[in-house]
Each structure stands twice: as C-alpha cells, then as structure tokens.
Length: 309
Ligand code: HMG
Ligand code: MG
Image (cartoon, rainbow, N blue to C red):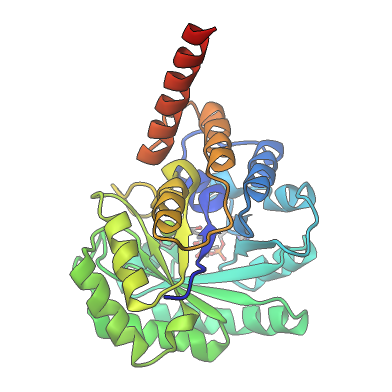
C-alpha cells in the first residue's frame, strides 16, 4: 500500500459556513495558520459566494490576505461562477474549487441552477484560472443520496464527475453531503467512477451525520483513494442540506491513517489544539472522539503528574 495520504482540510470553509456564529476574518486566518503549523498542506480557506446566500464566508479575501505566505501550502477557495474566480484570483488563492451536484434538486437549492447550467458557468472559471496557472478542483455533491430527491443513481455521479474532469478539474471530490453512505455503497460508487476516471484524480468528502464517515474513508482507502477531505474538530455541514452534520473529523483520520502506518504529515497534538481554538470561538464542543480522548488523557496525565510532585 502506498504509504502517504493527503488530507484536504475543509474546516475553515465547510465547517464555518454552517455555524450560527460568523467568525471574523482575523480569527479564521488564525485558525488556518494553526492548521498549517499542525502540518496540513492543503487547506480550504473560504468561499467567494454570495454573502446573501452564505454570510459566514463573507470577506474571504481578508482571510487570504492574512495567511502565512508559503509555497508548500495550497490555499483553496470555493467559487460558484466567473465573478467568484475573478475575486479569488485577485485575492491570491492558490487553488479554486467549483461545485455542482449529482442531484438536480440539490443543485437548484444550493446554487440556483441545473447541473448543465452549472457546468456551463464553470467554463469561464476554468479559463481564467488556467490563464493564471491556478489549478481547479471540482466537487460533486450528493453522491450517495440527496436531502431533497433521496436516491441518486450512480451513473449520474459518474457523468457529473467525468464532465468536471473534461472541463479540466485536476481532482474531483465526491461529496456524501448528507452522510448517507455505508462502505458497500462507497465501494460500488468508486468502482463505477474508476471506469471513467483514474482513481488518482478522485478524492472523497464524507459528512458524518450517521457516524459512518470513518468506515467510509477506510473503504475508500482500500479501493485505492489517497485524498480525503476532513474538518478539524468535525466542524461542518451545508446550509442547503438540512439535517446534515459535520465532515469526518481530521483528528479521526490522522489517528486512523497514522495507526495504519500511513503518513499524513500532521501533528495530532497541534491539530487538537487548533480544534480547541476554533471551538472556543464558536462556543461549541468538539465532535471528534479522538480530540475528546486526547483532552481526557491530557487531563489524566496532569492529575497523575500533580499527584506525584
Ligand atoms: P443567484 O441568486 O441565482 O444569482 O445566486 P445572482 O446572480 O442573482 O446573484 C445573487 C446575489 O449574489 C447578487 O447580489 C450577486 O451580485 C451576488 P445582490 O444583488 O443580491 O446584492 N453574487 C456574488 N457575490 C459574491 N460572490 C459571487 C457572487 N455571485 C453572485 N461569486 C449563486 C447564485 C451561485 C451566487 C448563489 O446561489 C450562491 O452563492 N450559492 C452558494 C451556496 C454555497 O456556498 N453553498 C455551500 C457550499 S457547497 C457545499 O458545502 C458542498 C461541499 O462541501 C461538498 C459536499 O459536502 O457535498 C462542497
Ligand atoms: Mg461538504
């Protein structure tokens, strides 16, 4: 088994877009800086979408302006259209991500257009990004179910992912937006996608609504996937996906992969501390069981140490 995996940290975007409390750009940038310090090298920093649709992502340009300038870190941002990519490139994003869905009903609610219309909108996005040698990632949402239409045929996922690849997206992230999948469905999905696309171009993006995300990541790993989207402290959700909860926690994936002997490049202590930082600002408790165990162990060690002195 290839011994390296890449985590795409989406907490500062997918995580924060769904929180009732909007964090100031300086706090979002501080979180991302801490994630870089923890060893993450591919980080979603925000989104250039309508602030009327997703107010939590307003002022992403101010987040980017505050980030440590590092050639070894990719700062990615979501863009829904040409206006978004123009703003993202002007703000210095090192990758942009377009997003559509395998479900017409979800796409209408999320970006107010059909799948075909979204793909047409992405053409000038890819042209602009390509002209500045900025890579474009592509997302397909609802790959294992839709909050509005329920079942999503696997062929529709393959069609949409292939269309994004044809447009020039270097990597396609398959999103289980509502956390509906189980490992057998993941295996079936990836086998179908692999008939149309090289597996190296696929990433997986599991929300953990039903507690299946770690199992699904393991299934994807065993199928050959090496790129995994995750959120520090299990932040996340989509405002247009009612009831869906956070992404798989980055802490869980670091614990899992390092335990399997795979290199993530991430320092778990620092990652847990970055999670505690953002949770403090949001006034929430961590959704990561690994982070909780980490805090409990630290508390136990502190007690033992203070008893022995
Ligand atoms: P619309 O209403 O159809 O289009 O929205 P519009 O052209 O009429 O624009 C509406 C307003 O947005 C206008 O402003 C535009 O100027 C402005 P107003 O006149 O109301 O003041 N606008 C913009 N502002 C900033 N940046 C832009 C931009 N474009 C237009 N780029 C639109 C269409 C796509 C803009 C809207 O639907 C939108 O922004 N949607 C974003 C939804 C979103 O961000 N969802 C969450 C991310 S997707 C996700 O979480 C799933 C994922 O994690 C994978 C998974 O889990 O499955 C990726
Ligand atoms: Mg998501």
